[in-house]
Image (cartoon, rainbow, N blue to C red):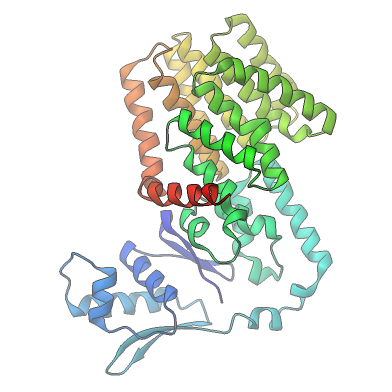
Amino acid sequence: MQLEFIEIEYKVTAEGITVELLPKEFALLQFLYQHRGRIFSREQLLEHVWPLEYPVDRTVDDHIYRLRKKLAPYAGLEIKTIRGLGYSLALQNPRSVEETTPTMQDPELHETMRNVFMKFHRYGQGRSMLTLARQKDVLGFKIDPYYSVYVHFVEGDIDWLLHTNEVSIEERLYWLILYYINLVKPEHSLILCEQLLEKKLMSAEQNREMELLNIIDLYAQAGETDKALDRLKKSYEVIKQQGYDYFIPQMAITEMFVHLVAGTEEHELEQMAEAIEADILSSSPYLRETGSYKIVKGLWMLNCQLWNEGEKLLDEGVQVLDNSGFIPLKLLALCRISFYFDCGKFPVKKELQQKYTYIYDEELERIGLKKKLKMLEDTIYNILNRV
């Protein structure tokens, strides 16, 4: 049995079953799981789970009692009491899932499930992807290697992306960078991404995505709008030549954002908005694209000093992206909003700036991203400097 910890919600999931815990119950189970098989005394558990606090020995016993009740649905998990020594977490042999589930060896089923993941991915249904991934043992299928990493990226599982031994750090690098660039100045992010592209440290597909799409936002926010517009033109040429049509929806939304930053005339922005709504969202009403577009259009409305309309669109966009379950895209949207208010190029209403600054900071705090900035930075630059 393998447990998956959802830190931002204090939930644990396995075998298609999700259990919600209190914060200290969650921390205690996570500690025991990380050191499963080892025995810990009450004093050791108090030291590791309740540092700088002053609970009594009974605190551990009470939490163990509640955990056992909540974890009862997991037949292969047991918190054992080792008389005179303490507590230990025991799990069934993880190989038993494959031994007792014949479909685990069915390649046709795995291909079918991969296509389902791809469909959810395309429609921007991150929550659907996560739900399916958490039920893999019950349904009896193996997750495609790409999606086994990608689902952790989607849900904001930074700890896994930083520390897992299941895949190499090189395979996780791109996803870590996409989180990191939300935390530092765009000028610094731009330099980093240019170095990574030059050294080709990521997969060909990831290099392509960063070069065609991700870096355009950074050019615009770093004040290099001419480079952003030039890269947009080149990206569209590559998309047309190579048939990367799946880039077009996000590319069109990014294009409108860049032109807003560049100070393009209102009538041109209006034409872009009409084209996105008529040609893209009407035929491809994907959650990610819908939410991202509402954000950019909302910023445009603020620039026109249509405060109520702009705020309404921003709120709708944030909500759609939250509903999608794609935390990285929600962060990108909030990063664009933050840039709008902080860059000094646009009309600003102070109360709106305070509102969205609070929402952005709250989201970063919720997934613990600011606390992990130093570790993210060290991990990324260690790889960069090795080459």
